[in-house]
Length: 64
Image (tube, rainbow, N blue to C red):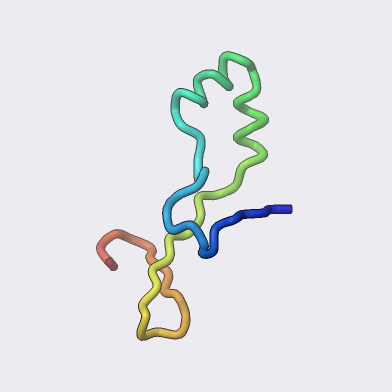
């Protein structure tokens, strides 16, 4: 269960990846392979156009 006191969704980033230093520590602990295996692909970035009813997917920076 996820509970958040905020009235609105968070606009910024929250844990989309593991920082390089954390990866080094996990490697030293011998658990990096298990952590990477349990992860997923990086989420597709979305851009919301207020005039469009559905968010548009961005596949490259040049589309912005």
